[in-house]
Image 1 (cartoon, helix red, strand yellow):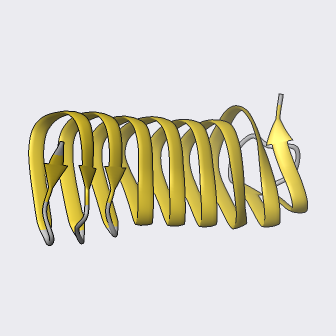
Image 2 (image 1 turned 30 degrees about the vertical axis):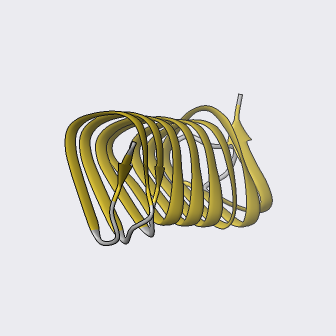
Length: 127
């Protein structure tokens, strides 16, 4: 368990981080519950205003804005974005560059390269 009011940093985190403004990890497994959560590789739950996984993410991102390079799982927020995606995006605006298998549910759903249509209202995806 890692707790701090302002800033947390770990190269390998296994467990839970919470209670502060910003957490950053190289490789994380568990839960990160801060205002801003950033990781290179993350498996588990990111819960905050901004959740960002720079390389790979597996699990659930729940926040105002969720960003990831390679995302497998659920993104739930006002704005969700992934370079490569497999799973479910629920939000007002969902954006994916490439979708393997998945579904977008929201007001604006954009799949740049290989979705049903480049942009759809309410639903978009690929199976």
